[in-house]
Length: 299
Image (cartoon, rainbow, N blue to C red; front, side, top):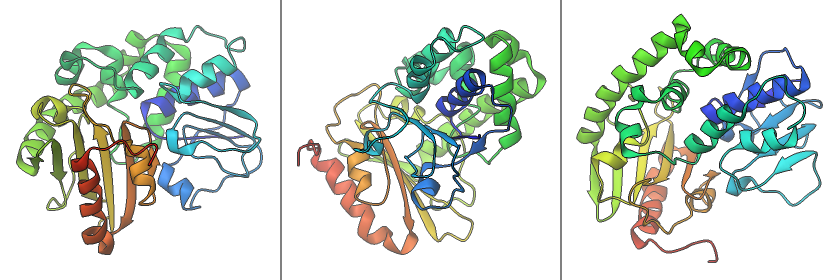
């Protein structure tokens, strides 16, 4: 029995809860949603998939993404909720060795992007927010660190976790990265009406950083489109669409929009990957939908 989940903070907390409730000691298998959708992840009978699209071979599935909803019988739980971790917490409520209420509340808040301006601009002042930023999109894979976090969060409270030397170093790096990321956003973002377009394709290496910073830097925008190359060969483009968490005027369901381009996600945040040769066709369509800003849920 293996846990297969996504390498973000919600995924880490999912792994903490599942490992505890089901007494699983094997290392977590980490996977990106797009890789699951393309059949690139080895999922077997007995596996528990969380915070990722459903797979026919898994034995249990837990998720909360709008575009991952399925209409067939399965074992596990799905509902639109702030986090997948919260769904798992409710499912196994009486099976845990520790009290995870505070950790799950943090996962709910962070995955639902219910953050204040100060939490976005100064994450070093907020323990869970800072920790969550050590596991985020755009960073190089670091499975040993992600698995270490799972073990630490099962055993210790947040202050003890942050005192771990490796975690402490990662947190220092996050603060450094956010400063560099702020400058990169200023250089590579322009606002088209109410859409902030961040194009990192000119960069050899895409900087990592707080995904919410763009909303504090460009408060007039209601949504961001972030574009980058996924691979060193520049053959695959990754596109992320996110509603502003401060200027909540975007009416487009981002998950539904990007599902038309091979991706998906939440109403307020979604992503997709496609061949670079498709960029001139797909990117104008995505931008046009966001500029029109029409509710696409009933279209």
